[in-house]
Length: 473
Image (cartoon, rainbow, N blue to C red; front, side, top):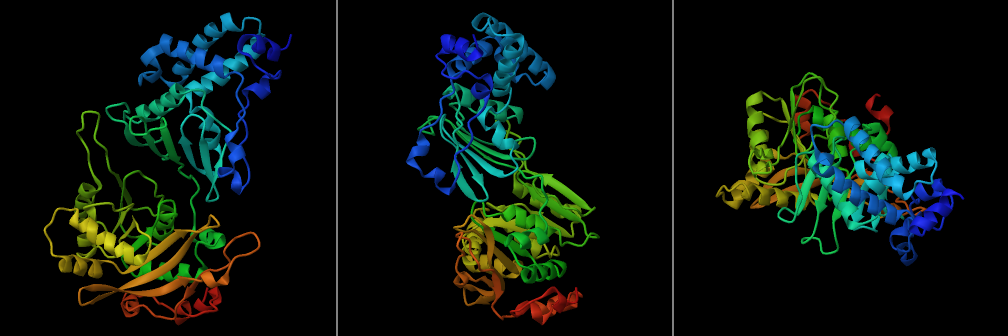
């Protein structure tokens, strides 16, 4: 009798091949997978009942030892495998030792790892994993969402995966604290929400951390920028312009900040400040600071704002803030206005004009009772350039606008668009945008200041028909 028949007797299994039983179903393919009604029908794992039953018994036996920080991964793996082998001996005693070992290793991987999402975390093409309950797992590939056929065997299984993730980084999640932000050891961002806040069960979102360092050349190849705009931004960074990178969620702001930061000369002292370390600067003189959340008792938090203020005492030539979300915007702009030119940051906004408005709002969040005109004067004086990113309908991330902050007229901050994405170029037969950034013909007002810094801004960068040869490269 084969393993499939024996599992059928034990668990009502309908397949006869152990490898097909243990394999995780492949994700649905095609852009329409996320919206197809047929995609809601998924393959049912015939070992689900066995996995749930075995997992429950294992947790009852091992209890908190599964989360004991004093146990190494090897020790924990050894405990789990031994207990699983004992548990399955009674249920599947008729299996050969090789078959039982394969099943034990599969269940152990589910319990000790990330279960059905483990394969997507290991897939370099997947940039985000979204778990909307037990049987709804989406992934993002190349900017598009796809519904997969993978699923968790039970709510408890998903809860335990979430608990393993947050416990490993010293956080907790329970009914009294049902929402948590955390970071995996590789830098991936994790957000988890459980009932009663999430009505339809536990929700888990993981934005994967890419170990691939993007370069300006790579972004130009992908169409995010073009050579002309790369040369322009390079000149602005070397000329110590304060640059703000703006965009919506998932538009590639951190990737762009990494690339823009690479233009900073290697002989300058750089301090980076982030919620979770993601920047990979290649310069030698870099000091990396990371904020710290409160501990379980609610104490010990070190916010971005404290790090920005502390960085001013570290003699930085440049300050790079991963993202401004609140009152730290005021401290950052004061730093930009007091001898730390050429600093960089990102924020969430849909346009350069919205970015200015958000900065004003965040300054007010600092708790300072400042008149709005004084805030706008600070913004107009501190920010030189805004690089606007957008995630397009075709899934690509593009720089759609580069604007200069030119000053104030009355009580209004004025902007001048230097580059604009050419939407009129239309789309190709595959549904991809054909356009790219085009100069508007306007020369930035800080051109002379770049000259004083020894940085040439060729007129060809402001004209159509640009080529690398036109700037002598």
